Amino acid sequence: MEQTTRTIQEKKHIALVAHDHCKTSLMEWVGIHKAILSAHALYATGTTGNLVQRATGLPVTAMLSGPMGGDQQVGALIAELKIDVLFFFWDPLNAVPHDPDVKALLRLATVWNIPVATNRATADFIIHSPLFTRPVEISIPDYQRYLQERLT
Image 1 (cartoon, rainbow, N blue to C red):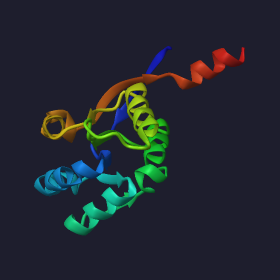
Image 2 (cartoon, one colour; image 1 turned 90 degrees about the vertical axis):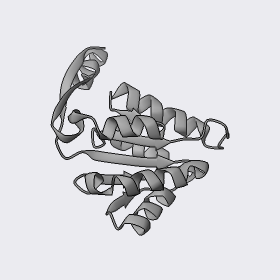
Image 3 (cartoon, rainbow, N blue to C red; image 1 turned 30 degrees about the vertical axis):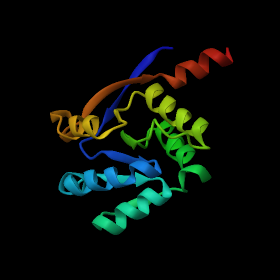
């Protein structure tokens, strides 16, 4: 597929997602980086978003809980170019009933070429990158061209 570019602005739109066994780790990580995250727009799946908001006071747009469709809601925001970075602390050792939704979310983040951290170490690398605090050009699928080719 042909590519085009998109600018991720200085103020990032960040999705926070965590499986149950990883929520404590994400909460600790958000607490450590609260000052940095406060300059950005935060979104999260339901339980995670409510926990983050309660623990930190940071405003969070909460979706449904992951198993109830929250992962798919975050994925839709990614496809609509409304999410710039995904911090998804997932538990690779415990299967979840909504595993297809998890895979779909990670697939969409890859398709739309957004930075994804699936663990604390990667999250630290992303948030401390000089790119995190400035506008960045990324390559994304040229959906309009794709659609035009499919319709002709």
